[in-house]
Amino acid sequence: MLTTTTAHARLLPAHDAHDYTYFRARLADPDLADAGVAVAFLGAPLLAVPVRGERRGGYARFGHVVDALQARALLGTVPGFPDLRVCWSPYRDTCHTVVWGAPAPQWWEGDEVFGRFFGYSDYAIADFLRQRSQTPSSASSDPRSPAAT
Image: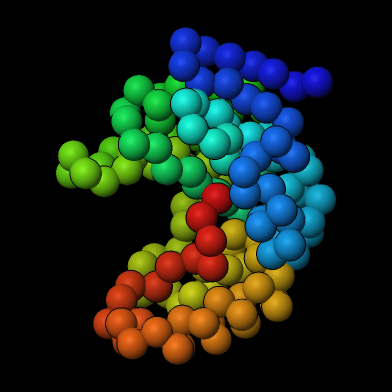
């Protein structure tokens, strides 16, 4: 059983992640969810999905700098999380992000490009685009991936 800890953070098996089922249902390769790990702090453990096959990168957001640093250190012990880096938020009320794999597409790239980069299935991408087109504010918002991991 996988359990790795630091002062406040710990890694758990992927299926212990609060969002495991959500991501497993949306990834083009559902086995990637099983190859991931749950990153746990005080709240619900969240899934970190590794890079493999069509999935070229990933990310996870953390509210505190120390949490992002601990998560980066822990993920560095797990295969499938290459080139780990922390992207600092310049704002106190915005999360810091741990990023792995290849650099993400530029912000102006379409949602389909983001979806493929993060390894989502064609169905998940189409569903995301359909839901987004029904949102009044979507015409002016920045492109986003179908879900964060």
